[in-house]
Image 1: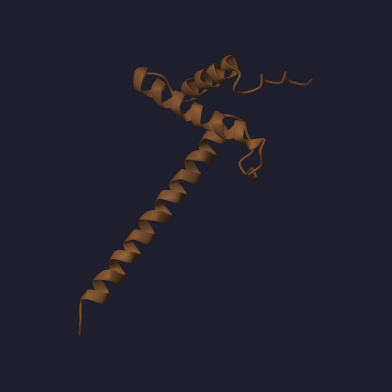
Image 2: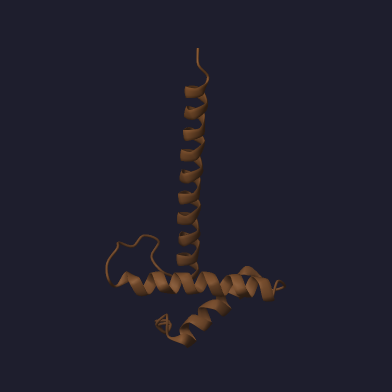
Length: 100
């Protein structure tokens, strides 16, 4: 009995498992960012979503910078600051006023 096919099979299974885990983590991160930006959780892939995807990338980058430079801020405070910066830069449209 040869052990090489078993080792190759185990290596392939581990590789698949690592890839699936990486994809799931990326999806969860995108969902958290979309929730912080008050965007729909599921969006199709259309031309209009390019701006949304860019906003998500910029938000994540800004949040990471704030986390590094101001570790004393809470998650909600960091998200609020990052969202305000995106509004100021014009990446996100301005907030809609609350209806009465």
